[in-house]
Length: 149
Image (cartoon, rainbow, N blue to C red):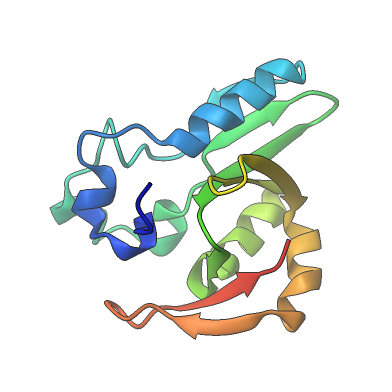
């Protein structure tokens, strides 16, 4: 098994000819928990938006939640897979705050090291953020929080 994570790869390496494995696990969880769901956000691995268009879109549009999910109520779901640690970009959290104001937002995290799933509401994530370590990606300088499970 490789120690290289998706965060260590380029955007093209992360997305060319691959499926979003975390979304596969999220959809399995939705089915197992009797949730109705619809794909909502952009699919960076299949029906891609050309990069000439993508980077001209407002961040709010690029960070559209991945799913609309219904069980007891209708909510947004963002899906994130990771190895080693959860990294949440500062700019994404700002946008998620707006999505959460429209309809409650949850994040499904898939840990590929332990094969565990964790689901947190955006509000619960924001309660944890003040206690998180912060860092930045070397390639683009974007700041992110390291969320402890």
